[in-house]
Amino acid sequence: MVFFFEDAKGARPLVRMLRRGGGLPWADFAAFILLAGLTVMVIHGTEQMDAPLAQLHTNPVTLDAARLPEYALRTTLRMFAALAASLVFTFSVATLAAKSRKAELIIVPALDILQSVPVLGFLSFTVTMFMGWFPFSQLGVECAAIFAIFTSQAWNMAFSFYQSLRTLPADLDEVTRQFGFSPWRRFVRLELPYAIPGLIWNMMMSMSGGWFFVVASEAITVGNTTVTLPGIGSWLSLAIAREDFKSVGLGVLAMGVVIVLYDQLVFRPIVAWADKFRFEQTASQAAPKSWVHDLIRRTRFLRTGIDVVLWPLRKLAALEWSRLPSVPRVRVTLSPKTDRALDAVWIAVVLVACAFALWQLIGFIARHLTWSDVVTTFGLGMVTLVRVVVLIALATLIWVPIGVWIGLRPAWSQRLQPIAQFLAAFPANVLFPFAVMAIVAFRLDPNIWLSPLMILGTQWYILFNVIAGASAIPGDMKEVAGIFGIRNWQWWRQIVIPAIFPYYVTGALTASGGCWNASIVAEVVTWGNRHLEAAGLGAFIANATSAGDYPRVALGIAVMSLFVIAFNRSVWRPMYAFAERRLRIN
Image (cartoon, rainbow, N blue to C red):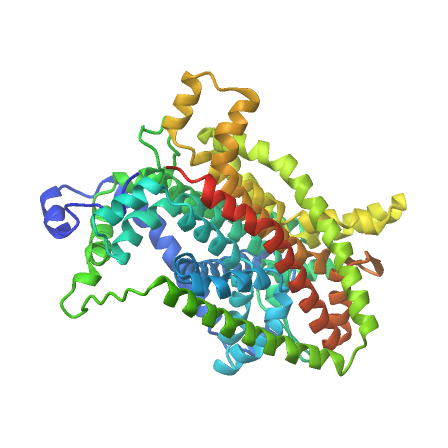
């Protein structure tokens, strides 16, 4: 386990630069060309984001292949902006939930609800706010699109980081306490490094998950006005509306090229760098490789520049905030009775707030609907629940063995990583025409054969988390298993399942929530003048949204949230508790 920001010479980057001397090596030249090109593209894309709003009407999205590279750039910038916001959200909110019991009572159920709320549900009340902040500018609509993509990325990353913080190795936890680490030093030296490997895999999954909803985020409707932002999502939406298979293929090809590029330039170097944070006592036999990571390590001036940029961060990480003279250390010790009383008061406050919100929601629905509507909606929710359970079970049986096989073989992990990202990013609506034609041609039941579209984009949460868990198995543990001849079912029962179980729970929890969200897209499918529908809560919400029936939309989202919370509390949360109690590395 390598501690974070550990560089004894990090405080003297300029001195080291002067000592190195020498000319400009080829590695610095290649890195300079690469960084210069990326910088130019980022500046060009960000300048376009601040263009006048009227330009979207005078220069609308077209299916001209010459404009597809610019559309790809705009979509990529939105997704990385959303990823940066998701990281800030994860480090703050997930850390608070893991460290505070009172905050956990609010944050964890809130995450359960938020991951089930449709992306369109967030857009409906945020787009007006963002456009009000930046009137007559595309920046307002861009912020709304970025926020919509953020809602498809953040919850998975937050759950992953929360799970890592709750399952820290007991011996390392005890060491930091015995050495008197401050909360800040403990975070940057232990908690963040330990969580990084799993978080990186979930970042990749979140990027791919963002592609799944990019069509909805780039075509924004405000009242009777639709604002279409330039991007791959809007390209695919227009191509599907015109039933243009050639343009759909070009859009998917552009998406694949973008995924390969940011895999090579961003995620693969990060995976190679993060390998040093693996928790093990023996050296890794096959470390991940990245040509960009190797290129940066061969540079002279670029590494010196990185040292200069990171020097303040290293100083910040080395600070003992609780020992600064201006921050007096105040310890308040409460008796167990007082602590329990405060917990009871806090729980009571939370319950009163929830009861008030529920009362307001029930009052709004009761003014427009009847109890018969509520019973019908709960029945549709049960139908969708059955689909979610069956699909998660099937995805588990398929992807857990595959994920373990990939995670235990770093060479194959590198080869399959971009392929898995592409498959995870593949938008479900691209398959709508094929699904509609197949169901109509073979006279299949839409209630059964539309269901796979729900799991298409969410099954990968299970795969990516299992890969992260299998790749994090300590090398010494695998060596001991080999020495003692642990094989077959005993190997799965005593080594693999305990190691990957916390990661699997995170992936399955996020996948189940994503299935509920995707049901709104998957249970109602349209291609041209052909329309197919499967009975379920997702179809109920989709139809109510199309009709502008807001009381039924509110009822559908409320029922979906209740189902998600009940399922998470009865299934996934006990599994989390079991992992924390029995499956921590000691």
